[in-house]
Image (cartoon, rainbow, N blue to C red; front, side, top):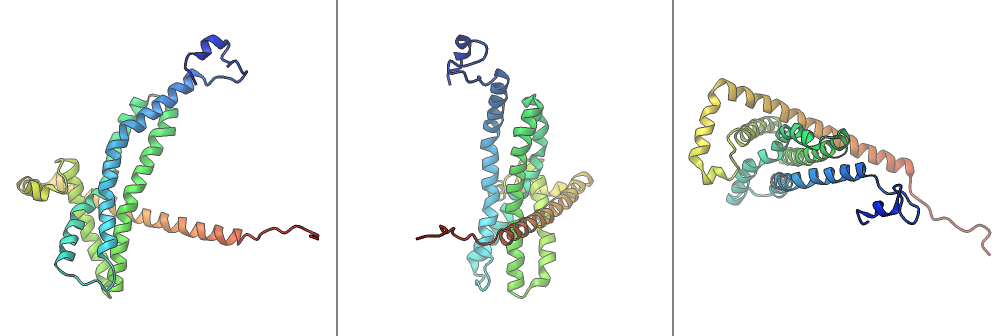
Amino acid sequence: MVADRGDRCGAGHRTDGQPLMSGHLHAIMATERGVLAANFKWMGWNLLLAVVPLVLALGLFQPGRRRRLWWWAGMLVFVGFLPNAAYVITDAVHIAQDAKQAGRPSVVFGAVLPLYAVYFAAGLACYAGALVQLRRYLVAERKGGLALPVEVSLHLLVAVGVFLGRVDRLNSWDVLARPMAVAGSVGHLAQTRPLTIVLAIVLVVGTAKAATVWAARILVASLRWAAIAVGPTRPSHVANER
């Protein structure tokens, strides 16, 4: 649609009699596209990093797989990248700024909040999926008693990683690229404020993981119930076929 046709058609109508989209709606759609464009790149990158531990978990934690040197190397990479999946929830700090830039409540509720909701859900799904795969692996290997201690330990390591990423702006690969910077930042965690923040992150991450797992179970159960309720479809036949 050509933008200036409304000036020549008169009274907000096209020559074919159909109403033009109002300028207000055009402005809202343009703002929504701006919100998506501004966040697409960094959200996409963060979600790509969040997928890494899930892919590693699916590859590493297979029952019966022998734990050779490459397996332990993969395990270290898994632990190093796992914080990226939980890190997404800390990006909630950007919502207020995006909402302010959006300006209109319709854009906030129609674009900003749904975008962040999908973003959080995707990241947490990767995090929960990786830990669920690990738990299943331990149970299959007859080490189910280690599942809870291992998960709590990973929550703690993830909280440390999230803190280092959000506060000190460190990345997973900085363990190799900048080991001294990572060691210095970890040393500061003994202080009261950083330690308190890390423990708070443990609580948030653990709760978010549990909520994600329960939400997935409810969704799967609902889909199964709906499939049973609908039942198999049968082809219709023409009555009194001759």
